View 1 (cartoon, rainbow, N blue to C red):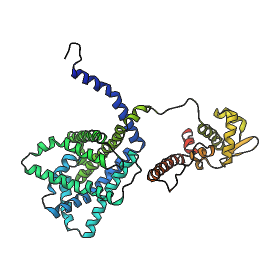
View 2: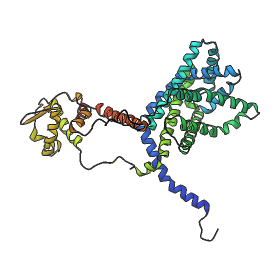
View 3: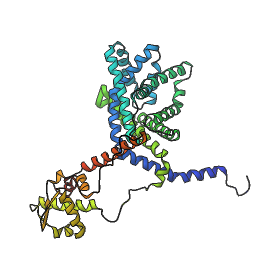
View 4: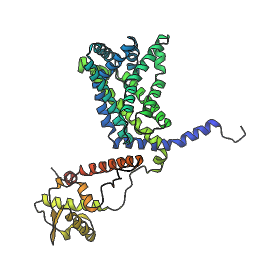
Length: 413
């Protein structure tokens, strides 16, 4: 190395510092995607789904393992407390007893357990696709193969591998040390294949490493939270293991589903870096804002007992220029949202029955998506599905908000 040449380690350090703003934007976009799509709500739903489906899932795995060898399922039960936060030994022992009792199930009951396990995968796949934004759907047989691989074959294979690993004389502590790498590899594979979309290995690996670290942190917190766990045992008694499991799974699914949003942000990194950090805002109001302001003024007058508002007063009440406001009033009247006479204006119906969608449609601000002919090729059929979903989501949000919703926070009611 010549004099004056920067040291390689320093150069790597400088490059790492330069990447910090990049990853900050990526994490911000992943968080925004997670929040907008209701990721936390999905995580809460899946935490309870995990509890309800865990026994059928473990029973299905046990039944499948028993057909091969009675000892193959042992590795699965050794893996559960290592990889799944909140799964205490008491809970694992109870699951094992329940699964062993399931061997006596009839064929119909076993089939019901299997269907429950498949529905669990369907819930996970649906949440993943929602966060990714995918509208693709697998055909039934590929979907069934994927579900079986994830919820049955995969766990059985992991259990077999763990059993062989432990039978080789390696201590369980050594397996715990390498558990992070095992978890990261497993999650990377799931992030790659569960979404009904093309996911790059680099994006899946980033999410897998992040989620594995998050799960490890959750396990550490629950391990150190002795006081909390003791308090739960005192309050809930014999069902404390279930309560702790559900509580932990809420955080687990938060981490796992955030990993989907993170993988998406990493894969579309160039788009994320070009997008603004905050939603763009304009200095002036648009047509929909002006119309809503006038309609809210009419609603306020109606509540005050004098529904007829002089049209000449609307610019003073709303700040909307008279000429522009008159044009919009005519459009709103044509759609039956307001009633006009020569001097005044009033709402035609209750504000709770007028949605933002109706106002935007009257002004021509929102329109139905243009359909693509059904005879189009496969790519255009998919585009039609994507545009249809986008249009339905916009319409759903706008139709879910009425003028009354906007007006209520301004009243004492």
